[in-house]
Length: 220
Image (cartoon, rainbow, N blue to C red):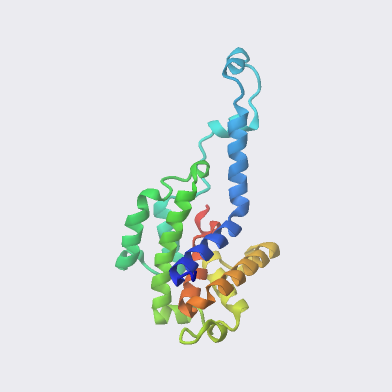
C-alpha cells in the first residue's frame, strides 16, 4: 500500500523526534523508575522515620521549577527563533489554541509526557508551515534552497540546509558539542531522504518542524 505524503511526513517527524530526544526520554524513564522503586514499604518507612531518604524519594518530593518551558514560553520562543509574531498569524494561533491544554503548564520536567511532545510538534508545524510559505522569510533562512525544484536539485546541498536550520533554531553550532551536531546531521539527513518523495517544500517543513520542536528549543 502506498503511504500518502501526509502520513510519510508524520511518521518521519516522529521518528526523528524519538532519536533527538532519546537521551532526555531515557533520563525521564530512569527517573520514574527511581521514584517508583524508591519509596519502599509504607510500613517500613513509618517504622524507620530516621532512615536517610534515597535519591528517588528526594527527587519525588522536590518541586522542580526549571527544565521545561511552559506553553507561553514555548510559543514565545518559537516566535523569536523563526522571526514570526504568532499573534499576527491566524493559523499559528489556531494551532496554539488547539493544543494549549496539552502543552506544559509549568516548568516541572518531571511531569513532561508524550502528549505534550505531540502538542509541541503540532505547534512547531504551524510555525514551519508559515515560514515555508513566506517567500521572503524562507529565502533569508534557507538561502540556496530552490523550492521550485525536486529535492534532489532543490536540496542538493543538504549539509548547508541542515546547518542553516540548526543555527536558526538552536543557535551557533559551536555552542553544541561535535557529537550533538553530527547526530543531528545524521538524523536530519535520514529525514530528508524519507520526505523527499513529498517534494521540496514538504521536506523543508518536516526538517523545520523536527528541529523547532526538539528539546534544544523547549528546555530551559
